[in-house]
Image 1 (cartoon, rainbow, N blue to C red):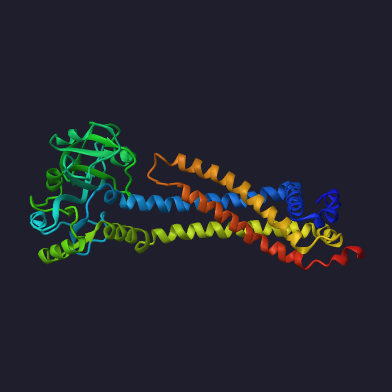
Image 2: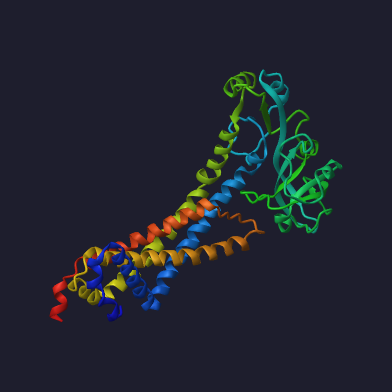
Amino acid sequence: MAQADTLPIQAQVPQGKPKTVKMAGKLAYRNLFHDRLSLIVTLTGIVFSVVLVAVQCGLYIGSERMIAAMLDQSKGDLWVAPLGTKSFDDPSLLIGHEKYSVLSTKGVAGSEELVVGFAAWRKPKGGMTAVLIVGSDHEDGTLKPWNLVAGNLGDLDAPLSVAVDDTYFKDLGVENNGETAEINGMRVKIAAVTHAIRSFTTLPYVFTSLNLARTLLDAGSNQSSYTLVRLEPGADIETVRADLMARLQDREILTQQEFRNRSVDYWLFQTGAGSALIAGAALGMIVGVVIVAQTLYSSTKDHLNEFATLRALGASAGYIHKVILFQAMMSAVVGYGIGMVLSMLVIWASKDTTLFIIMTPGLALLLFALTIGMCAIAAVSAIFKVTRIDPAGVFSR
């Protein structure tokens, strides 16, 4: 800390709170940027923490959206699902004829069948990989391929036609629309290509018609994996659900939100994937707090004589605390800005990969609040150190 900075303190302190705060901010700024090496170490810790937490939280939000993507795209009030279904991506076949029972129930406006199941995809140049077939009514249904970048929904009317996502071209061993491959031993043609429809399980989605999906998955003509139910305006959802449960034994009747919550809970928490992301974010925060606390404490310890001189000149303990807190807040703002720039670069670099990292305004505000809180906590050790300064000690040296 420059000696010249300490001289006006005694005169400034009694002249009112605004000038005291302004002077504390000025001192914090000069103290912070005086030792460039400590500043770099502090900012490195904050930036590392911000980027790590941003990526972990972004992955968590992205994972949640990937898991619920099919459910969010479909528009229905109730789902008829096989008993014990854990998520949309954990399909099995219903017994059959559910659509007719649903349509004959009072309060139901319409229904939609979905056929979902795992299949083996043989690549054109050799090799196999697993895919998740999604068969739907892409003309009148609500769940259909979206974000189309090649072909259109009408192209799926052609026999043995499927739609795949370009994010998984490498996994599927294809490069362009129009190429052919085999699914469960049956030759199919890529008639449409989507973009950025990612799968949390990393198994590529392959969209096709209901009939072709039944054929590929060896399902009966009256079987489906899910039956989506749309209610008439004004119909009571619980009354309709009770009627459906009475008609459809050994099936589950779930609301849209219940099925969404069940799918997200299964993949994020029962598999441990979500816990790992949360633990990574917490680790980033802890590392950031430790690094910032260490550098602030060292900086304070190096300037104990100057702080003691300030106390001897009449500066209060609160004034010294403000200087340290200002240092922490300035570090937080600068580190947050750099960290957010790097985080957005990471998100931009991953936009065409299977990683789905999302930054939302709410997450950006949360990260800013966490960074401020992290640096405030880190300043506690330095404040505790200067609290024990004896102003008389400066005269004994």
